[in-house]
Each structure stands twice: as structure tokens, then as C-alpha cells.
Length: 117
Image 1: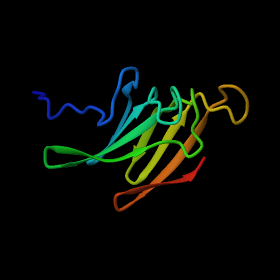
Image 2: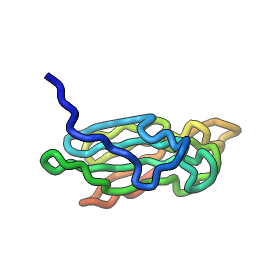
Image 3: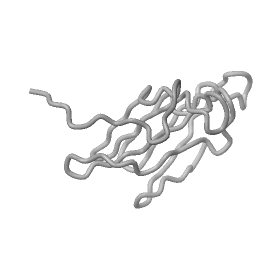
């Protein structure tokens, strides 16, 4: 039997953020993409990091692209393994319009740091 443990929502969510458009779970850490978030411009995107203690989920961090701009869609895909996180930005245009990119992060204690793009 499956039972709902929690319902998570963005702490600063607004319409069209697309919170939860991508999800990755590793142990007691959860990465949730919000590719429509607009912290760095319309549709720039973000990723929310949560940790679980017993049955309580708490937001650990909110990540945005270091060079994020409108329409990057940062967080459109997420993959989490232990303390390593890969985040897709399908609209990033470093190599041409919509060429996309992947950002790599690592966690030390409760701090996530970008290691590569």
C-alpha cells in the first residue's frame, strides 16, 4: 500500500513556475526543477533542493544558473546521485539559440556549489 508522505510546494512559487517539472531522489535528498521560474528573467528556471528527516521534508537550497537569463529553462531535467547533481538548461544559448547545456553541482555538508558547465 502506498500512502502520501508529503506535498511540497515552492516557498516562493508563482503561476507558470512549473515547480516539479523534473524530479530526482537520492536517499533523503530530493531535487525539484522549476523550469519556468523567473528569478533571472522569464523562464530562466531554478532547482529546489530538499532533505528529509524522518517524515519531514525541508528546503535546503534554491539553485539558479550562475549565468542564467530568460528562457534558459534551467532545471528542465535533473539527475541526483548522492552529493552530485546534474541540471539541464535546454534553452541556454552559449553555442547558438536553444543549444542547451548541463550544469554540474556538488554538495559539501548543506552547501551546493557549481563545479562545471
